[in-house]
Length: 432
Image (cartoon, rainbow, N blue to C red):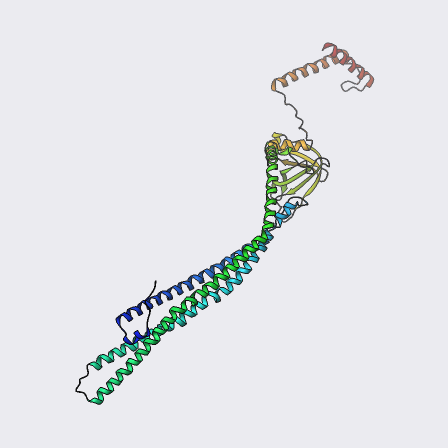
C-alpha cells in the first residue's frame, strides 16, 4: 500500500495534510517495528527448534550406532552383513547431515537475529526519539505562539520586539526538528527494504545451502540404500520360503514335543523333583535334569539352593530305574533310580504321567513286581487243603511208620526216614 510523499517544504507549513501524511508513515513504522519483533521471536523459536531437532537426531544416531545385530550361525551371508552394518551407515549419514545443520544453526543468530535487532533498536528507536523531540518542540512553539498573539499592542516596542524574536527562535527550532524527523522517517522507510530483507535472505540462503548439502549426501547414500533394499528383499523372500517349514515344525512340536529333538541334544531333559532330607525334614527339591542314554549319564542342576550351600550340576551314572508303586508314596508320577555315585534309592517326581513314561522309556525303566493278595474265600480253601494234607501225613505215619526210627523224637536212620518220605509222596501223587 503506497503513501503520499513527504516534502521538506511541508515542514515549514506544518499543515493538517502534512500531519495526516506523517501519521501514515508513523503507523507504517509501528507496523514495521511489530513485524521485526515477530520475525525475531519466531526466528529465535525456529533456530531453537532446529537446534533441538539436530540434538534429537544426533541422539537418535547414537542409539542406532550403539545397536549391533546378532545372527544365528558361524558365518554371515552378504545380505546379513549389509543388514548388520545398516545402522552404522544410517548413523554416519545422520551425523554428517546434522554437523552441517549445526554449523548453520550456530551462525543463524548472527545472520538473522542480530541485524534485525540492531535495525529495530538503532534506526526505528532513533526515529521514535526524533518524533518525541518533534512533538515536544511543536508543543513549545505553539504554546509560545498562543501567548505571543495575546500580547497587547500597547506593550513597549522593545518588549514586543523581544517576543517576536523568541517566537522566531522557537519556530526555527520546531522547523529544524520537523526536518530532522521527516528526514529520519524517510530514511527508515527506505533502508528497511534492505536492512530487513538482507538478514532474512542470508538466513534462508544458509538454510537452503544446508538442505542442498542434505540432498547431495542423500544422493551419495542412494547406492547403499538400493543395495540394502535388495538385501532386505532377499531376506524377506528367504523368510517367506522357510515359513511353511517353520509352521510345520511348530505343529509337530505341539503334537509331540519330545519327538522333535535336534542332533547332539540329550535323550530327554526337563524339570524333576527329588525327595531329599534336609535339616527341617523331608522336602521335594526342584532340579533341571538331562539324561544321555548312550552314556547312561544323568545331569541334575538344582533350581533351589540349600541354606548356606551353593550347589552346581551333578553328573550321575544310572544303574536302574523302576516305577514307584502308587500305594507306596503319597505323591503322583514318581519313579525310583539308583546311581553309582549316590548310595541308596533316589525318588524322582515328574510333572505328569505322560512325562514319567517318557523318562522311564529313556532310562529303560521297569514296572514294580506285585504280589497279588488272596481273597478270604481263597484263604479258606487253602486252609482246607493244607488241613487235609497234614491229616494224610499223620495217618500215614501212624499206620505205616510209627515204629520207624528217626521220626518224632526217636533217633534213627536217615535212610529209613527218606524211604518213608518217598513212599508217602508216591502215595500222595497217586491219590491226587
